[in-house]
Image 1 (cartoon, rainbow, N blue to C red):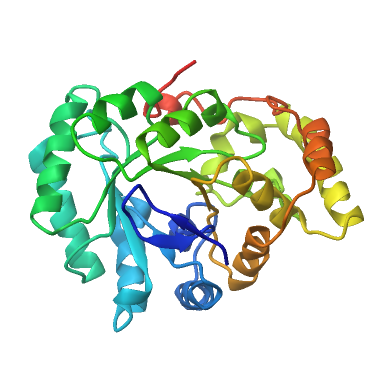
Image 2 (cartoon, rainbow, N blue to C red):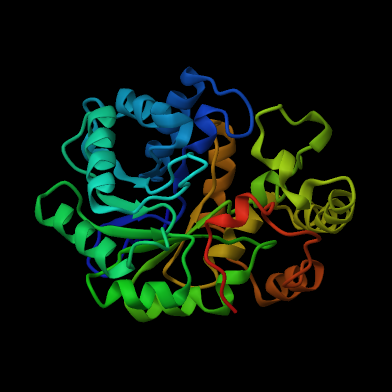
Amino acid sequence: MQKRQLGRDGPQIGAVALGTMNFVGAYAPGDPDEAMRCMARCVDLGMNHFDTSNVYGMGRSEELLSRFLAGRRDQVVLASKAGITRQSDRPFNNEPAYLAQCLDESLQRLKVDHLDLYYIHRRDPSVPVEDVIGQMARFREQGKIRAIGLSEVSPATLDRAAAVAPIAAVQSEYSLWTRLPELGMVQACARHGAALVAFSALGRGMLTKTPPDPAAFDKGDLRRTMPRFDAVNYPRNLARISLFVDYARETGRSPEALAIAWLLSRAPHVIALPGSRSAAHMEANARGAVLELTATDLTEIERILPAGFAHGARYSPEQARGPEDYC
């Protein structure tokens, strides 16, 4: 597993990381035993950066991680997040007192004394980002976190935040079918020495050898309301992605490895963060970190899946309330 740095002064981590939202039913019911096997296999393969949040399963993801971390905390570079409330009257809260409460609760659920990386999961526009980062810097001074991250923000917000304290990472959705970060965030992270942690690196399952069938989505699957999976857009997206899957097969690679390798080729500070609850799936993803793409590969992938090819917005209007727009 190739290594990449998590921030300007941060640790070396696997170029492919593990997102744990799927452990607790974001797409389908989770299996705790399968999740434990998945985490163990990731560590074996060098994927030592695990990402969670206090709202994944309303704390259940963190509790599950605590079982794995017992006795092997030093094997994992651990990240969590706060800022989403799930409350209709105030869906995002970045108030210092609220963040402090969330951090203490996360540490208790995870049964650890610090996080290696702590993100603002969504920016609360009612609180100046300078105040938010000031509070995050105090968490670092207290020894509760090692580094500060931001999620789904604009380059302008990153500029403001980095003027207060170093930002180690920015999480953005980034894959072959979501390329907005190329219009500013990839470049902004490079300027500030931050890693760009690309979540949904496989397009929420689309860039795999077995793309999902929306008709089979579980009732709790968050993709049910995403426009790219609706009855109009999904067939168009599937037809295009099928050509990519065919190209991977014809050239002796898996689409998962090809999509991950493409993402890692974008810049040396990009880290792929696919979500999974399967050890076998993460093994397939890990192959992308050892696959070297040729100029021919890159040209052909761009021809098959050019920037902006996807039909439909990535989020529904309700889901799009938190991420910051830019460009």
